[in-house]
Image: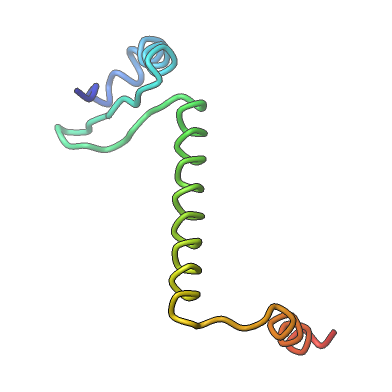
Length: 90
């Protein structure tokens, strides 16, 4: 179950929120006027999130590449490199 705190707690209970985020490696959802506004998390949790996001992006690109191979939409690497060199006037 997510931890939800009002925005006033950022000012009044910052240390408690920080300790919670570090101890449980979980985000804290902050509300403003009763509505969701922010998510607070430890740097470590954020870095794990970024790594996961990067992996998902890579897997998606690999999937696109595999689908292109299945559909025969491929060219020899030497042709691609030659086209890039032409484009860059190398």
